[in-house]
Image 1 (spheres, helix red, strand yellow):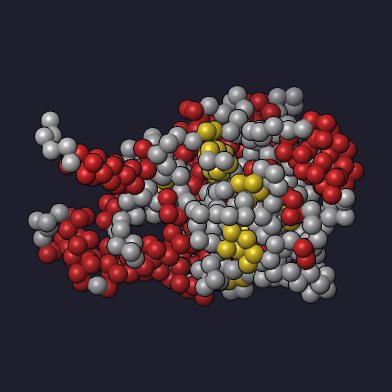
Image 2 (cartoon, one colour):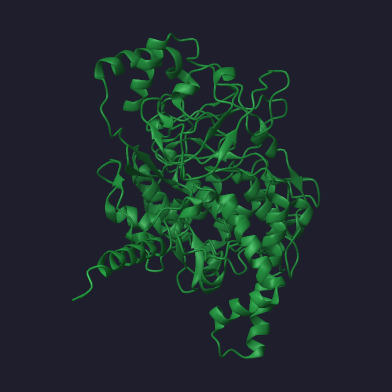
Amino acid sequence: MIANKALRPLLRAHIAAALLALAAANPSSAAEPNYANQGVHWTPAERTEFYSLDQGSRIMPLDWFKALKRPDGSHFLDDGMTRYGYLPNPDSAAGLPVGFLVAPESKTLSMTCSACHTRQIDVGGVSWRIDGGPAIVDIQHFFADIDTSVDKVVNDAPTFAEFAKQVLGQHATELERKLLHKQVEDWFKPYHVLMKESLPPQGWGVGRLDAVSMIFNRVSGLDIGTSPDHIIKENIKRANAPVRYPFLWNAPVQDMTQWPGFAENGNDILGLARNVGEVYGVFGVFHPRKDILYPDGVEYLNGSSLNMPGLMRLETLIRQIEPPKWQWAVDKRLADAGKKIYDRECGANCHEINTKDAAKRLCAKFTWRTPIQDVGTDVAEYGVLERVGKTGVLEGQLLPKPPFNQRLKRDGESQINILTVAVVQSILRAPIHFRDIALYEPLLRECLNNESDRADVTAQALRENFLGVIGKSLATLYQKPEEKTPPAYEARVMQGIWAAAPYLHNGSVPTLADLLKKPADRPASFKVGPAYDIENVGLAKEQTKFDDTYATTASCDPKNRDASGNSRCGHDYGTSLSDPDKKALLEYLKSL
C-alpha cells in the first residue's frame, strides 16, 4: 500500500509510460484488426500459414538482423518494422511481422509472399486486414536502411565491436570476431552493389516496387557471374519503373500475369515458375556454376535455397484467397444502375470473366482471359523488358522455348531469356538435386484431377514423363513483346477492386472516383497510407502513417508517351459520364 497519496498519480503515469513502451517494443500486443470476409475456404489456419510459409528467401542470419541498428540508433525489430508499414504477426515466436520468418534449420531471416501481398486499411478508427491485397509498405526504405546499417558495421570499428558483442557474446575471441567481420563483409559486397546500382534517388514510394527490374538485376547482376562473388555489375540497371503491388485473389487463374503481361499463367506448374522467379528476386540463393559433370555443363542448383514444397503449397493457399467483400452498406438500387453502366462502358473485352477465349493450359480445366491492352498509361515498366546483359556462366545454355535451337550468347542477351533459363532449369533439375523423385507429386495430382476427362492422360503416363509435361508447360513461359507493339498492360477482373487503391498499374491515381476524371483533373500529388475513403473508394486525402507524398505527371501526348514511372495519364473510360452515372458506377464497383 502506498502511504503517500500524492505519489499515486506519479506512479500511475510511470506505469502508463512503461506500458506504452512495452507496446511499442512488442507490436503483437497491438489491437487485433478486423479481417475482411474472403470466403469460407480462407480460415485462420490458412492465414497463419500464409503469413510465414518459407519459400526459400534467405536475407541474412537472424542474429545479425537483431543486432543491427538503424541510422536513428534503434534496432530493426524495436517497433516490429511497423515504420516500414509491415504488419504485426502475433503468431511469430521471433517477433517478426507478417511475411517474415526464421528459415527452417538455418536461423536465417527469410521473406515470403505475404510481406508484399497483405494490406491493412483504416476506416473510421477501425482497421481491416485484407489478405492478398497490395501491401502499403516502404520496401525501398527498408532495403536502404539495411544497406546503411551494415555499411557502418563493416567500416566503423566501434559499431562493429558492439555488433560483434551482441552476435557472439562478450567472451568471443579475436579470431571469432575477425571471422564474423569477414562474413559480414562478404555478405555486404553483393548487397551493397545491388542497392547502390538499383535504387532510384527519388524512391519508389510507399506501396510501390520495381519488381521486374529487381528480379532481372538480382539474377543477372548478382547470381550468374563467376565465383567467388558471382557479380556482373554492368548487368544491374536502375530500377526506375515502380508499380503498385498486384492483388493475389484470382491471380492463379489468369492466363497471363505480370503488369505488362509477359508471363504465361493459369496452372500450378506456371504458378511454381512465377514463384521461383519471385524468390530469386528476394534473396533466394542461386549460384549456378560451370561443371562438366552436369547436363550442358552447368550445375544450376549449387547451394540452392529454393523450398519447392513451400512454393507449391503457397500456390494452393493463394487459390483459396477470395476477393474481399465490401464491409459497409451498399445502395442496391444505385449499384444495379451502376452495373448497367459498367457493362456498357468497361465490362466486355476488358475486365470481364472470360473463359471461352482464354488460353488453354496443360493441367488446368480452365483459365480466365487476361487482355493485354494499351490504354495510354505510363510506359516505363514496358521499357524494362527491352534490357539486355551478359550471361556469365550461363553462356551457351539452350533456351528452353521454341524453336529449341537457340543458345544464350555471351553479351547483349535479353534479360527475359536469362531469367527463362534460370527459372526453367531450376525447376526441371530440382528433383535430382534435392534427391526427391516425388518432389512434384502435388503438381502431378493436380494435373490428374484437371485432365481426368482425357483418355490419354493416366497416372502411369504422367509419372513416366511428368518432367516432360512440366517442360512442355514452361516452353513459352516468358514472352518478350514484339517490336513496335504499343506499350500495353494486363486488365484484371475487377472483383475486390475497391480494396486495391491506388489505381493504374503504377499506382498513380488515389481513388476510383479520381480514375473517373480526365487525367488533367486527377490529383497532381497525394499522400499514401492506410487511411481509406469509402465514399470515393480509395486512399483518404489525409494520411498520418507515413510522410510520403506521391507526385504524379500528366504528359499525355500519345506520340510521346510518358515514361516517368509516375504518369497519371490513360484509362479514360468513364471520364465523360455524368456525375450521377459516376456515382452509380462507384456503388457497383464496391459490390464486386
